Every structure is written in C-alpha cells, then in structure tokens.
Length: 320
Image 1: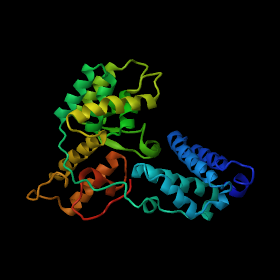
Image 2: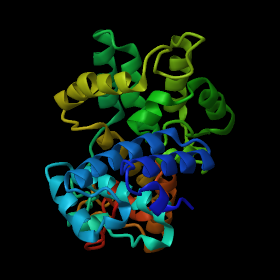
Image 3: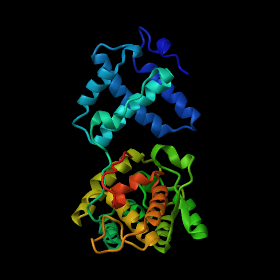
C-alpha cells in the first residue's frame, strides 16, 4: 500500500502519488495502458480543481470537496461525470486503502447513466451494407468495415478498429465464433474470454478485410496511424453517413445485434421491438438470453442489456 502521508505530504504536487499508484496498479494487472491513461487524465483534472481550492494534501480531501467538484462537471455527459468521479475513488483507494470511504458516483451525479431502451431497433443488414458501400464510394475503405463489424459482431468502435482480423477470421472458420481481445473496455479481453458467434455474413466480411489489408497490418488501423486519429475519422466520416439513413450512432448497431441475438435465442422479439400482442419469452429463457448477450457484448452484467433490448420490468436502470 502506498503511504498517502508520505506521497501527498507538504511540498509534493497533489497528483504525484496518484499517478505513481495508478502506474503500479496498471503494471500489476498486466499493463492496462488505456485504463492507466484514462484514470491519469481524470485524476489530473480533479487535482487541478483541488489545488485551486488550496488543497495540497490528500488528508484534506473531504466528501464536501468532491461534491463541489462534481458540480463543476455538470455540463458534461452523465457517463463522463461518473467516470471522472469514479477515478477519484480509484486513486484514493490505491493511495489510502481502507482509510478512504468510497462514494457512489451515480448518487452524486443524481442521474443513472444507462437507461432502459424503449425506442425500437429497426436496423437491417441491408441498411448497414448501404452505409458501407456509401463510405467505399467516398474512398473510405477501412472505415467502411466498422459499421459491418459493429452490426454483425456487436463490437464497440475501438474493438472493431483494433480487431486482429487475420486471427479471428481463422477462429471464425474453425469454431464459428471469435474471442474479442483487443480494444475491450477496461482491458477485459486480457482476462475474460468473450466468445461472439460469427455467422456466414461475418465470416465473409472478415475474409474481405483480410484480403484488403496489406500483410503488415493486423487491424483496420493502418501501420503508422494512431488509434485516436482513426477514431476521429469514425466520428467525422462514418457517423454522418449513418445519420443520413436514420441511425443515430454506432451504439444503435450494437443494439441491433443484441435484439437479433435475443430473437435467435428466445424466438421472441426483444422487449423494445415487441408489440403488445406479441408473445413474450418465459422468464427463465429471457434471463438466459440476457446472460448470453451480456457476455457477447462484453459487459458481463445482465442488467446492462436493458439499454440494448429493453425490459418488461418497471424501473431497473443500471450503471454500465
């Protein structure tokens, strides 16, 4: 355990021990670089605020200070607010252990970041192919595969961008499924196997990507290109084409994947797509479908599927 008094003592920058503790934790957990970078950035923002209030010692960080800091985040998205506040918990726990009393970011923000989906998901494979073709016509070949991978395999944008396509193509042909490892949220792909079924359409797309990419490239992000630049291109190039056909964001393609999987498993439409007269899945079958979909999406919590497929139960908003 890092000694908070020594590291946050007089004459030290408030951020110093926090960054050192994060670095050590990332190293101990197998080099979670994205986790380390994200928490370092968020912790630095909190330290800037604390120091502006004259706080230079971690022993003087109080619940009242955190509450005041939370108010400065109010203009940001709910998920962003909770992530920044969660970083304070993470770092203070690392440097102070049991001396730090954790707070609830959700309660502090006062809004759940993940709501139950009520809007139907009507995205079709033909629509996604149309988007892909439109991107190719504009010369964005690599970007054209992102919507297809999101829709067919339920991948997040980073997972689609960094997918080791040659490896997963061989997996898909051999096993009919792939294990998503790179780009996963919180580095989960390093520790938790995530099998995602790969049907004929997915295998065909993976094969096409393999044939298109030069040998030196493992993924859609070309050699010499930073992921951040590729990610920005997705936002500036792919999303406008999606919106042209009524798809608001890539998350809707993951939701479409989840809804299709729900129907494949239960033989019933997902709650968000179901009409009042349509049959409902039995409770145990519904729960089993949610467990499977949760694992395939990389959440490992069935409640999170509420934001993808909806629910028959009132309330139940959950954090992601």
